[in-house]
Image (cartoon, helix red, strand yellow):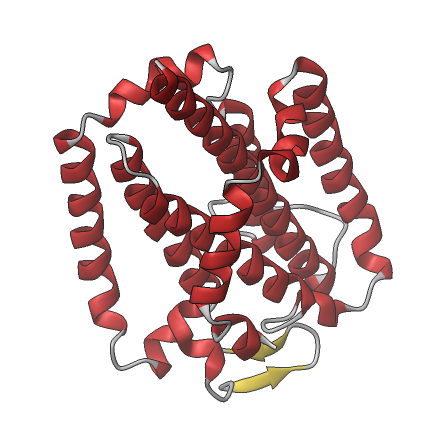
Length: 252
């Protein structure tokens, strides 16, 4: 299933989002999250989803949380959609610094998608199958190009910083602030969900008690899915605010 997620053609997705981006009514539901009521609903909904995931995990089949499982494939689809949406906005926005902003945002989504796919290792045969946690992959052992991943990421970050400085992306902060579209809540939820995921995985000295190995892995993937959903909502709010600002300036 992960293969299907990876090889979804990006051009049709990009074209679809390019059309959707110009149709504000279809994006209007995301405006709800700009309101106090909407932010509160997102906060409470995410918290309840995390708590519900903890209590539901022991009663669900562990296969849902496996590599190439339903939850991870859904994560990849959301990340690819988020990246394609940002790419569509970058290619269809004519004014700066908006255009540079979306070019900076676009690769972040695709990097996260590749990370979820273990940089491509999940497209290969697993090293072995664990009866509880499913197929086991290792990017270090299975990918000849794994040593290049970190240097490429460093170059990417340097390029993003250069673009941010060149086009003064800080000028967008007042625009987003006035539109109540700085995604602080969504980013905070993203971090919180990843902390839950990290704890479920038993990393950084954190641990979640009461779950066996399979249930913990399922909660880990569920928390990551919620993190990406929050990030997607945050991007939608930013997109709406920047498009509205650009339209207002065009009329002046």
